Length: 143
Image (cartoon, rainbow, N blue to C red; front, side, top):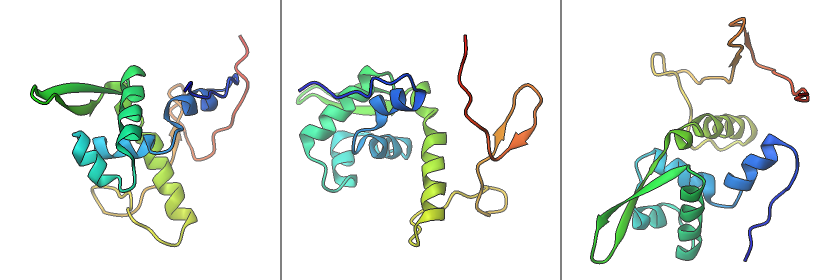
């Protein structure tokens, strides 16, 4: 079965083509937290079918988000780690966690400053003028 794609000229759509499937970001989250083996991931992600987990891991590896390393030959078993591009998804996961904590009554995790343990907010910095903003805006990229 061929994977459906958005085929839109949009970075959000292109990103969702890679990480927008059900379970994919949760797999990235778990690997980020040190859950690195297939059976550990299957146990952590209650309800995921083994074939779906295997498929998502293959897609993440083919897209350069994770890499696998064999830790057993008989039977062949692998552990997974995030690549440099995979670790860059941390900001996406943090933004989703913050949005969820602001949107839902039940809070499962909080993102806090390690110095004072207060919840953090999202802010963006312009590398040119070094100013901070909470509300960047979309503009078309005209080349």
